[in-house]
Amino acid sequence: MMAIGRKEREPFVIQHADVATGDADGKLLHDMTIVVGSDGRIEQVLPSNQAFVPAGYHCIDATGKVVAPGLINAHTHLFAEGKMMKAKTVSPRQEQAAVALLHSPIGKAYMAAKVKANAKTLLNSGVTTIRSLGDVGYEMVALRDKVDADEVLGPRILASGPMLCIPGGHGDPYIALSSTTPEEARLNARINLEHGVNVIKVAATGGVTDAKEVGVAGSPQMDEASMVAVCEEAHEAGVIVAAHAESAAGVKAALRAGVDTIEHGSPMDEEIVDLFLHNPRSLRGFSGLNSTLSPCLPLVKIDQEVLGISDIMRSNSEQVTDGMVQGARDGHQYGISEGVGTDTAMGLVTQYNTWRELDLLVRYADFTPAEAFHAATQVNAKNLGIDDATGSIAIGKDADLLVLDGDPVADLRFLEHPQLVVARGWPVWRPKVKHMEEVDSLVETF
Image (cartoon, rainbow, N blue to C red):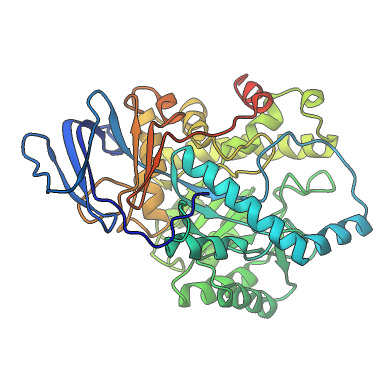
C-alpha cells in the first residue's frame, strides 16, 4: 500500500463525466463536473457549463466516462485472499500451535503485512470503505489508524477486532474471544472497545467453514442475554454490532438483543421482518441485512470434488444456503435495509470481486442492477452510520469516487475494472489487482 506521509492532497476537478448517482432508480446525470478540494471533500457537483474551476486545481477530462460513488463492502476479513478451500483435519495440538504462532511477534508482523496488502487489493478494485467482521487480533485497528492519519493510502475502515462467541463456537479460537455468561460477554466487548474497535461482531449461530459436525451451521450458539450485554456495551460507546446468524432462531435472538446488522440470514417470518424494520434495542431503531451470497453459493453450485471440501462442509452448506438466498429475497420484498457484504477471505471469495455480490443479488434475490448498486453505496453507508461522509456524490462528503468505462446500472461488469479510484480525495491512478484465474473461472460457472 502506498505511503502518503503527511503531504497535502492536490485539489482536482473531474470534468464532462456522466454521474451514476447510486439512487435506487439508477439515475444517471449527464455532462457533470465534480470539484474536490485539498481536504478531500467534494466542493461542487454541477452541470459542466455551470461549474466554476478554481485556479490551481488539477483538471481531469472524463468525457465518455462515468463517475460513481466508491463501493462499500460491509463484510470483509483480510487475513486471507480467498483461495480454494481444501478439506483438511487439524488436531487440537496443531490448532493451539497455529493460534500461538498467529499471536507471536512474528505472527503479528505477518498479519499486519497481510491485511495491508489485502486492503490495497480491495481499494484498487473500487472498494473505498470496508468493515472487517472477525480479525485475528487488532491489526485492522492499527491499519485503520494509519489510513485515518493519512500515513498510508487505503479504504475507510470499520474494524471489529476478534469476534465474540461461545467456547468452541464459530470463529473460536482463531479470530474470536469466547465467553460462557453475559458478564463474560460484556467483558469481551469492553476488551475490544478498549483496543479501539469501531464495530463489534457476535456469533449467534454456528457457521459452515469451521463446523466439525453436520448440523452445526445455523444452530444457536451465543445466548440472547449475552448478546444483549454486548449490544448494551457497544451502543453506549456509539458502536454498532453485527451478528453472524444462519437460521431463523439465531436471527430472531440477535435482533431481539439489538444487533444492528444481520450477516448471512434466513427466511423471514412476520416477527423477523418487524424487528428488522423497527428494532428498539438497536443503535438507530432499525437493523440491516447483509446476505453474503458470495461464500455460500459456490459451496452448493460447484462440484464437491472440484472444490475439495469435506462432506461435513458440503452438508452444512446445503442446510443453510437456500435459507440465506430466501432471506435475501424476503429482505428485498419487505423493504428491509439490505446492504452488500461478501465475506472476503472465505473460499472463492477474493478481495477484488465485490462487484460479483451485486450480480448475485440480481440473479438470485430479485434485485435490479440499480438496486444492487444502491445497496453497495447508499444503503451500506446508512446501515454503517457513515452516510454523512460517504455513499453518494454530494457537496461536503468525502471524495470516494470511481471513474468507470460505463454505467454500472447498464452493466455491473463496468465495476470490475475501474479506471481511477479516489479514496477520501486521494487518487489511485491506473488501479490494478492480481487475479486468481482458477478462482475466477470457477465462480463464473454459476
